[in-house]
Length: 134
Image (cartoon, rainbow, N blue to C red; front, side, top):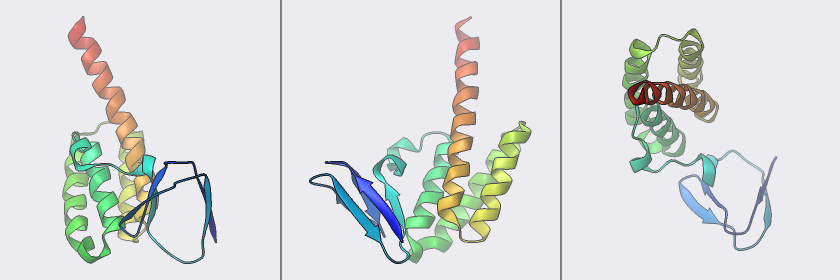
C-alpha cells in the first residue's frame, strides 16, 4: 500500500489521468498503478535537451502502456545518442542503470536515473555558458 499526501491544488497523474487536490488530501493506493506527482511530470515543450527528451520518453513509457513499445524504441535511440556524447563515468553509469531498469519494465525507477542525467547536463550547460561569457 502506498500513502500519498497532496497539498491543495497539487496535481498527480494516475494511469494517464490528471488529478488535482481541491483540499489537502491523503490517498492510499492499494494496487499497482502508474503514478507521478505533478513535479515529476514533464510537458512535451519542456523536453528541450537530450537528457530531458530521454526523461520524457521514459515517462511516456511508464504512463502509456498501450504505446510502450513505441516509447521504448524512442528511449533506446535517445539513450544511445546520449551515451555516445557523454564522457563522465558517473553519467555513463546512470545511463547503464537506466537501460537496465527500462529493460526490466521499471520505468519509474528509470526516471530517477534520467533526473541524474538532467542534473549532469545542466551542470555541463552551465559550464559551457560560463565559458562563453569569459
